[in-house]
Length: 285
Image 1 (cartoon, helix red, strand yellow):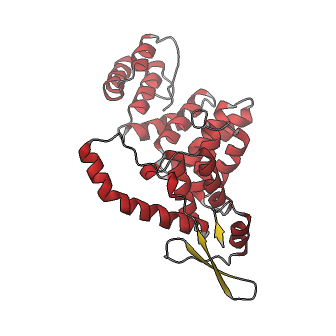
Image 2 (cartoon, one colour):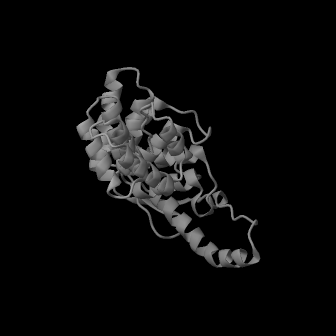
Image 3 (cartoon, rainbow, N blue to C red):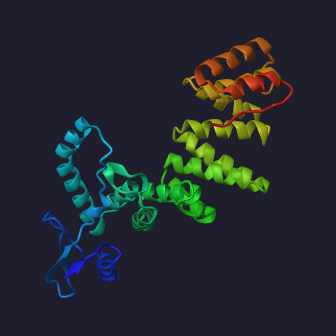
């Protein structure tokens, strides 16, 4: 019996029954039927999804020829493990189709398929990647679905994925129609900060200062980031110094921090905002 791929109804049925096994024999799939007896089928691996580009130099083409066999083995093994229900393989296969890893052709549909399989079985990073795809639409490759993105980000964030916390913070901030949205945004930025995500820390700090007027907490978070070399954090501390928000007002120290941020970050917005000293604007990463 031959199956085209994991979309096939019979393969999905075997996956749900947890009776599907695999061998290393290039797509030979072994399964156990209801009577405990083994059956088998040959899975067709879609090697046509590997597109080895010709737009390479002669040296690159020579190196590619040496690598091609290992790439084919990698893809075949990954596909078999994914069909056999390995969540890590399903997540990796989703990423491969999502970002075109190792000459895999980019396919949003297949990325969604494999991310969804792993995400539905609780794989935290597949949940995060699925949420990111639904959140951004990847430059128009798929229609954004903010509500679904929030659901998947939440599942991943609850499993302590820092980038999922960041995604949730951003989504709640962008849709901020109520104070509750700001509170949820701050909640997830703070959770990501606790997990060591620098952008979460800076965003949490900015929210504390601009939306909740909790300068003590906001400045503490910014200084924490600034001490690890963050130019954006230094710039925002400079604004706080300029206006005396949570820190003693000190224009000279603010100027020093602005110059440091401009030199380190190279963002012309820093210079523009410094010249517009009448406004309190903190920038987000």
